[in-house]
Image (cartoon, helix red, strand yellow):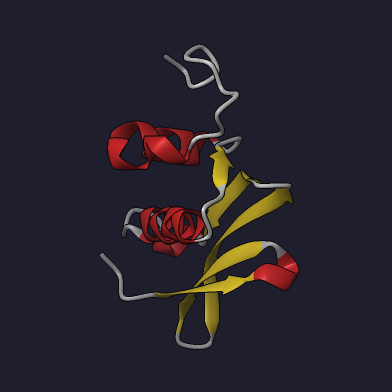
Length: 103
């Protein structure tokens, strides 16, 4: 796992993974009422495979929980992360059916 800092930039609707002064990854989202649509996760190619995307998604989901919002995992990586970390499934948008969740 790489030592990165996750920074929430609400004005840009994104979470950024920072290595020093460099942005090495980001998770983009759109806020719709009380639902955060997490629609894109990206990590610099040289940083892939070091847990950066997982740190981004984990921190974003923690923030969603603190803000008492719901999440719509439009990004396949986010959907897979939530499936592998069931402790976050309570954050899923209530209108999502089992089929929508990929079950």
